[in-house]
Image (cartoon, rainbow, N blue to C red; front, side):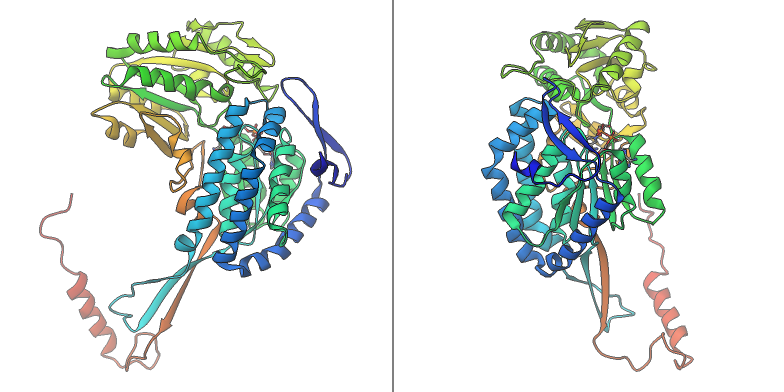
Length: 503
Ligand code: NAD
């Protein structure tokens, strides 16, 4: 593969391998502080010219990148399949959604970030006011392996559209995909070199935090997110953290149970459950619990993992995750849970068979910590309020789903999560105008949508005096009556409490 061989080997290197077969996909340098600093410097030089292109020039460049990704989709999908292990269909979904985000960010950056006039106040009515969002400079992006296209591009695209350059460190499990994304940008846009890639493990990521970047966009586990934040604190580098999840689904009494079961299964087991937004807990109200479960079990019994074209999901990409899944499963079974699909032998490296668990006690690991496997615990709740209470009793708060009729909206708003979908799972990822980000252990800050563009920009406020007033507040020479007059004006404008208290 030309793009991999073209990269000079610096210092020690590492291989990425196919999780299904062990075949080597590519060899990459383990970039250290020197190489990372050089990449940041190159990006910084390019950024000045990128910013000068303005919104229109960047929109055209990003449109060229979009067209390049579309033309090379088959190649990218095949590479994701080889390096991450997921089926071609799942890889294709990632690319399709990424292209939608690329299109939206390029087309909307000017509207969201461009200069606009804002209202002044009565006291400063002789001043015009405007706000615009200027680029930060160079953004360091660190990504995980589970969605090696969509997740990093969710930051990279929005950072570029806002006028920044990017230095991207892909996961050490999916460096070939990371290099592909940067190489495709270079092929489509060429100069300026605003999308740089460095490869390596956590040491390379750590070096990127310290390399003089103006912001870090990190996606990964909460444990690593904390380390990134500590490293960035040293130089006051701002961070946006997109971390793990333990997403809940609530199924109310008037839900469409077929749809709920079908989506719980897909949300929990697509990509072998290795999705930050995977449905990892299902809370079903007592009234429909048995009926929902029968539908889920029937469907889950038909789902199969594998490496071939007929497989519903692929292998576990990160070998040590198999131990986590096994531990969560064993812990639940030891505490009295029952497996209605699969069982203790579900973990067959590199695959895990689908598991549906019931009677899981609330303190079981599988209801508290991220499992990242195709294991779905289903919990009985008294009613929708109880289901929400159980769902919210978890430190994570990334996404959530509700299957309900009448109470759907109320439940969706009550769930403690950054995003919630009603009568579907994960839909918010595919709507680029929505923000995406979590609360609690799931991180903070947003990517996607207008908030995602602003995450990679700093607001710049400007006022312009249109005409001078004979007397102003801001002068040592102001006459004695000015402040009493201003005080009186304040009293008249703001001194009256509303007659009926607002609710
Ligand atoms: P991870 O935290 O192990 O690694 C993420 C990235 O950080 C990798 O590129 C890694 O090399 C790098 N890294 C490791 N140590 C570092 C350090 N000290 N300093 C800087 N960088 C360092 O996570 P992972 O196993 O790659 O991904 C799985 C996790 O990511 C799961 O928790 C999943 O839920 C989460 N995730 C979250 C989202 C989201 O949008 N919120 C999306 C995908 C994955």
